[in-house]
Image (tube, rainbow, N blue to C red; front, side):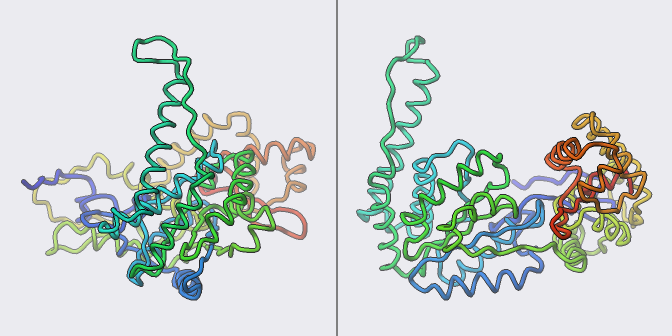
Length: 429
């Protein structure tokens, strides 16, 4: 039984839904975010693909670094899809690096990921000794870890507090041998290697990033240098620097790939591709919901943050057209929205968010916005603009940067330059 599409405001533009979604593109059937929508990044893709091919039967390691929302994870999804076509084994999912990880907990998730990649790609290998050993280790660790969490919570079957602690085995005791056996199995198969994707670095706190750096270093030899295993670690520039490049032992084996902002021309091509995929009636043209001039201006506001740009386009357009449900069978072509149409709603939303998140810093942003919202500042110039001491400015900058209202723009000599983020530019222009 097919599901009948309900009318949405996007039908006014002959679209089935919003073309401004911010989710990662997916390499699977029957999705409205297909990986075929991927645009650009030819140089980055070619560089990493060539390096992985060049590693042959050995291993390779890449840290993919870029600004928040620039499209790092989608780039890696496209790379994995390309490498699958080349004969490598890879999954669309990835392994999260978590704030409370230990070397053992991260290792067991990596082992589980490699096992599951092999199981999905080559199910006939399930009875192989290496696969059976990996399955047993992953299952036992998960089961005993679950028992441990239940015991710590204090709830037994009878409702009383349990005094039994089921300590999970140390995955590092036998795990590396099992992983080597899995990779030896890959080497004797028809696969060229396995792609391991680690993510979530940018969501770690400073303390967790330091801990992750030590954990990753401890896994360098037992995991990242396993023959046939190609590791892709994804995070912001700061996160990669803190967690991957902190130790010389890791810098010596990882190659950092910087992901630059997608050029405006590619962003416009990306939107055109989405309009085509979401086209509702083939007999009617798609009317772009937002004028190109508005996309151009917002692109400048968000300084390469593609996710932030798409969110602003999505919310700005939805705010204006949200109450305009099309009549059944309506065929009128609606005009594209301008920035003037969308800006009042976007500004109100952004200012409300600002007031809730950093109420004690609004005066600082107001001064910056009133003077010149497009200007870049160092902490030294902000002491004059804000009338604060150097120490107070440092605290304010750190607070506003973590809240997402200012962004680092790079060094000017030995001083870091900062600019207003896209969200702040919506308020101040």
